[in-house]
Image (cartoon, rainbow over all chains, first blue to last red; front, top):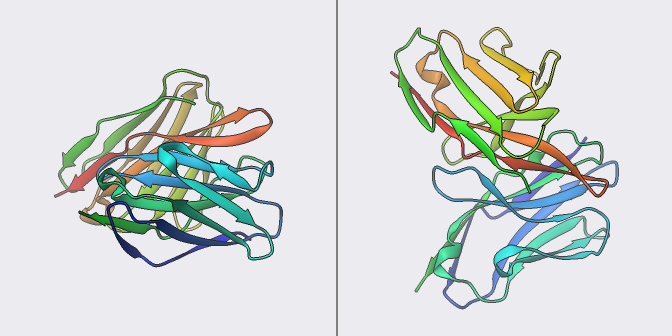
Length: 113
Length: 117
């Protein structure tokens, strides 16, 4: 069975500050890991994904995440927050057979000026 | 990537009526599509997996007779909420499954907001 835990339902940062959104996973098989962003009343947009290539994954909009097997973590970071980063962020896990994603509960990122 | 559309984006219906939501893969043929449901301020919960030409696979607890899924072509899957009730009000999101370079990825539609009065 697979599961995802996102630590912190709400994270607040100042514009220009480091963004760190935490995600820990549980999987009995080598996982695929994803970070998605959702703006109000919209679908999900893929930020980045880990599929067993490089452990440091770079995504869109300056985001990156590092897969750490020893810590079963896949935390999302961005060096400098922008107001437009304010949104809901979801971490998700799947196996490698193309089955459906298992989502975490989401983290709301607020960015203040 | 992949471009996925959903129609309608918003729908309000009266209790007891049925509503059909369409999910279209606009730029590639999708054998597999997924339907998710999202309550306010909550995560996405998988409802069913839709495979072209065969019956959908529903997750535990999802009523297949209430949430009818049809995946009649490689570019279209539909979700029909039958005899809708206020508790069915939710945000419904579809996704398509695409294989690229040996790995799988899902691309999501913009979602459909259903309100049952």
